[in-house]
Length: 260
Image (cartoon, rainbow, N blue to C red; front, side, top):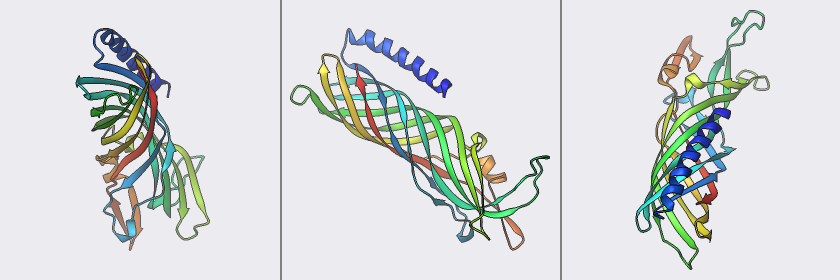
């Protein structure tokens, strides 16, 4: 958390200095900061058949924040970038095997066929690149804009809260909180960004910026080596079936900030 805040502050400071310098000469540039609460989910894409079905188990309400930098190369048409710290996640459920261990030795003492309910807690540093189209000032102060582009996200942290419910006795469960799953999640995630919003100018170079963005992940977020070797070992007819885990992370966010 501290490291990601440091990245954001340094990036925001650099963009602010560059923006402040250019704005004194050309108002084609603007700079902003924002917060962005979101509804986030993970969509599984697993070929596991009837007995190894992955299912979504709900979304999560999370938060993001960041800095924006926009350049309008012609009137009301421009490109936008910046840096965002985004908290993503969602819930999945799927059949697996729980391996209880002896606390004194750390060795596995049993295998228990279970249904795993996993809550993903992912943190990314995102660099967006979008095309922006604006109406320009309406009634002197208000404008509407739309944007479309790509977001490249770099993993900062990946953790999970797990609940293993025993298949033979569903009332019995085992929980593991805040498990580090960094090795199971890929470092880079790509997504498509579609957004609409508006700005309200209340000073010569200061505007309120607000909007709604859909960030649709289109690349697998799970690590291939982990999926092939470790992910799912579920016993059926004395055989172990290995499942390659795939999934995409997406979210819808509300966007509120200030542009200078």
